[in-house]
Image (cartoon, rainbow, N blue to C red):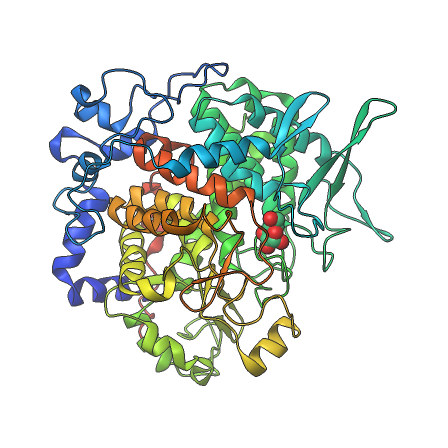
Length: 576
Ligand code: GLC
């Protein structure tokens, strides 16, 4: 039996009730005559960009089921009874035990208006047009590079604008980033690949000449000089979100956009010395943009890679070499899902397997393919791993498994259906089971656990910003709320998202929208956290809007590709 099959079947053996209940919530939402997953493919009604009303998709989940509840277009401030949605999305689950259960809040939370004000204040203009949002507007801290538009930071802002029917800024941003991609990128005497997208860009205003110019950073100014591998992926993801939300295919169909996609794909689909389908990366190449021991095959990049391949496939046209890319994408997706679903997956059963691994096996019959030495399993994993639940670990490479939990990669794996429905359920189970560790008092831990002492010295290079339970090293990042909320909706557990949002609502605005929190429970405003961090603000708005109208999920989510399933069975020699 395959490792993958083994672990999943063990899961269901251990927890048959929970498993079947959760599976029902995740996959069988056709009760009440509603097929939730079909909403992901519903073509939204184009929204009027000038209108300030919220984008109101006529296929809104709530409307499909209870049209009487919301007969008129809502303004942004109107909050729908999400309790009703919960019942529809997650049949058989109740909100009993969650804070404010039983209460129906029709009043907008005051933080929503504050968030919109701050988000609008963060807009960056190029020759009169909005092209992005600045990373942070902290009046008290030195700006460093926080006065730039970061590609990854703009994603939640873009989603918030799209959900509010304001698509123009997203289009401007996508086109601007495309322009920058065409620049020649040099670091010292070396030139980066053509497809590389910038980590960030800045608009320089010349008041004398009354002209605006752009300056971009592809890694040549970044601390550590690392290129942002995630930027190209986020660009593709955003292009798909824009297309899905507006129904406007003309942007993605433009020859320049098609070329931009092909250039990104040729970078990440290039053939080389790889023996794995995963993408080999330098440390600090994504949201975790400092040395944190994520070099190799970080789950964040692998999940974003998988998602953007799937999204690119829906947008690529066969002309101009696109057909060849579509074929290469198909092959890579199969290989990637097989590799990640199997080798990155960890649950109680799988942990027990690795613990008993034999080493130094040679030939294709090896069980312990990467020659992982069981003694390298850190002690904390044995306590952390619940009987119910599982997750994709941080990294897998020869003789090295990074057992740390990373939220972004796991949520993207759920949204892109890189995780099988069973794995998606297990990830949500883990979050519930380890709520104190992974959510604590302020959502959400970027990684768990923190590196301390000697390990911190060796792995981070004594980074004073990444001390234990701070920043990337086990710090809590409010921006991640939107990803958790999306994953919760997809798996039919909006009550988890609601609980996390309520935690944020207790403090986030009062604390001035910090970039991150510190401490085991995320109780303290981060040591060097910027205030009025734009993606903390936008992440909250996206989470709120998505919960209010779950049909927004379709912008950043994909149903499982059934064609990938048969390839999951491994050779019969796989035992453990
Ligand atoms: C930090 C984060 C990075 C983010 C940047 C701007 O460097 O690690 O992910 O893009 O700040 O907010």
